[in-house]
Length: 289
Image (cartoon, rainbow, N blue to C red; front, side, top):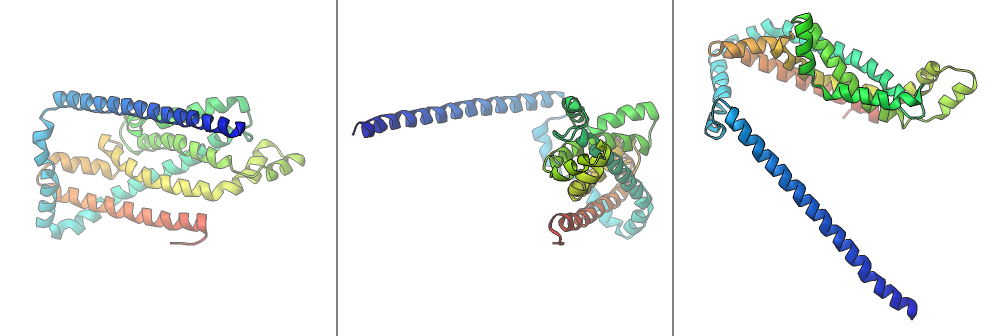
């Protein structure tokens, strides 16, 4: 009887503590939401003051440029196949930039991930240093790195390749490190027992286990890098983005060429997205969807 009375007295206390915790979370959530809204409004007002024109009155003109491109492209639609052939070499350059940067960045990411995985790293004390280094590589946008390299090396595909490769190494390095943590340690311990060094243990005991996941994430990153290499062309890094900038800057009279470039980019991204999806599904599920 006494135990029942004690339990009945403790239940309201637990319930009240839970309700108080819920109220506290709601208050904190409301405060954070209010801060977020205030920051958004403040940022919008600052941007509005620094813009050449007002944002809200300019909203009806948002579709003017796409409409002009579509209208001129439709008017000169017979010339679009010729423009597609004309800009195809620039598209190949963009794809090459993305492919080489993905390959270099992916190889660097494998090395960084192995040096930053607990239980596998050659120098465990260096794990935080390597992880912070990858954070820095991810934090700096490719366009910032490309602008600095263009200033140092001049325009062309090389600055774009280096910029994308550095960002890829940081992004894939973190993903690969998380994959490594799920690798079975049995093969690594077996290789260590027969005298294998660290490099042999990683190449023979870890990499074969995680290679399909490595390739899957690398293909996904390759799609992202195609878009990044096209964007970097706007700052003089070569490829089809550079041609797109020139056609848009020229204005009316070149919009049909801009439309051909948009068609090329759209078709390329869709094609590689579908191909990489098939390969990733084969790697992860053993079948294509």
